[in-house]
Image (cartoon, rainbow, N blue to C red; front, top):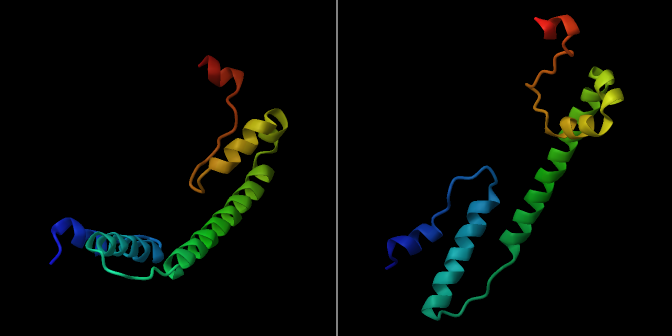
Length: 111
């Protein structure tokens, strides 16, 4: 009874967050029901669970970020001494696989 576009709005997509596809499907269902003039009552359950999931994810990312920053500062004291603002910004974007090598000597630069 639905066209392809409407069906796809209802079909949950694959996502790393479990509640994102359900929330998206609910929004698609609401749009279809409103369009058809069917009476319904929308629940905030999916939105609340999605927001809780997002908040937990953000807290975990902040925790990981703090750990990366704690590890970066002791490993690069000379960088923090010379360029404190740059070092703080760099610590925020460093990936665990990134490697910072010591500065080149004048001889190395000359070569």
